[in-house]
Image (cartoon, rainbow, N blue to C red; front, side):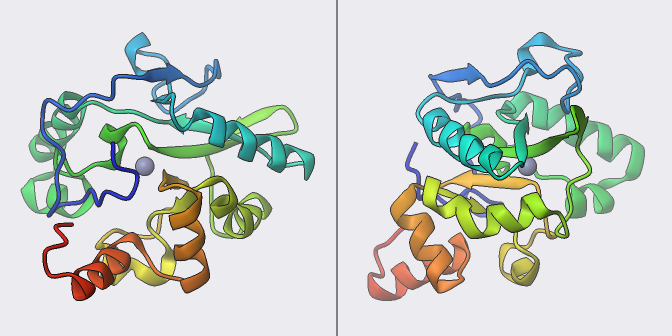
Length: 200
Ligand SMILES: [Zn+2]
């Protein structure tokens, strides 16, 4: 996986793409999938796990306990979510609120949604007003992570503000994006301006 890769509606992952180094990240029984299916335990690519663990440890020192709530999701799983929404809520709703299979960064293994442990209790009530969020906004880039769908970039990413969704892009690129206050889409647009053959 190219850590700088743009994954969105226009740049979809192949239906057969599965990261080959997935690892289970924690044993929290309250996670996104409620362990209904053991294959859906929060998993990420082993290549980014050390970075997450470093970030987690640094946050813990400040009293913030951040966990991975939902990591890898397969193409087929996204298809199930898509089909269920089309059936229950219609195609227009689904197009607006559900990522089409292949367009979800969760298939890449290098993106995840966070939750918190507060006073020993799990919560997935993650907002842009949280002290944990403020800490992440100032520090996530030091570990190679970016908030993928920021509040002020909704028109550019095409996705509503998601204070819980983080993506690994590597320390160098994350720092560049942080210092320039630009999204991954804007980064690739700049690259394309410099080099018309840039293909993301
Ligand atoms: Zn997400």
